[in-house]
Image (cartoon, rainbow, N blue to C red; front, side, top):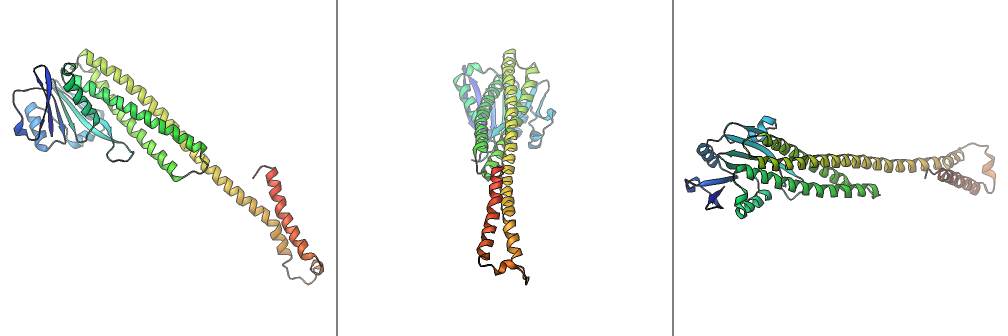
Amino acid sequence: MMNFFIKRNGLVVRESVLSIEAIASNIDILWIDLLHPSLEEIAYISKTYMLEIPTKEEREEIEESARYWEDSETVTINTYFLTRPNEQNLLHNETVTFLVAQGILFTVRYSEFRVFDEIQQRVLASPKNFEDGFDLISKIFELRVEKDADMLESIARETRLLRRMVVGEKQLGDEILEKLSTLQEMHLSLRDSLFDKRLAIAALIRTRKADEDVRKDLGIVLKDINSLVEFTNVNMGILDNIQTLFSNQINIEQNKIIKIFTVVTVAMMPPTLIATIYGMNFTHMPELEWTYSYPVALAVMIASTIFPVIYFKKKKWL
């Protein structure tokens, strides 16, 4: 589907087009948003506006030259936007393509993003703030970075909560390890998205196709991204610390169990020795003829069991 944002009488109106035959000619276009475009729609836009729209393989390449390039007429950007493909807590980076040509912004995307819905509402409500495609890109990146910041704050709160759980929890379960792994994945996805947008914005600031106001706005967004990257790195360091604490807690629990088994083994050795001695079938064992030899042997065995336990407790090994 193609959404056309058309300048008309000082306003911007939106027209959704499901077929290229329905596209009107001689219209003043500000933005064409291609959501889940068909091959026919891609071919029409490429031919009509003399554009080279990246293929799916080109959109996913990670080389810097594949993420941003420009020529005398156009600027092309492939950059990551975060999304949740399922109801799960994991994040996924989806590539969105931006092209600016003849003052028109072209966006190619295959996922729904709230950022685009909000920007479209802003464009319709305040058309004077959006003169060309670069004004749109600036606002889209600004709003997307704000969303990333909110997401990072939420993840940071979960990270601090997890740290308190690991420190205070006596019974460490698999859910803690699963939560730790999820948070690490979310931080990695968020950091990759920020790195990718930082590359695109830094390149946009250098281009002379955008006006001075747009470059200033993008400079502010770039500073915000740098601070978010630092914050993300700090959080990832905290997660590494949590993982170390988690491993140490498990080692401590295992050591306690091993210590208990060791004490039990040592405590049972003397009575086992006594029982072994009096289980021998020798003919001359004077204790066998004593009247109270059996209770005496039991008492010695009990005493030899209790003594090591008391000794270990005094040494604070238990």
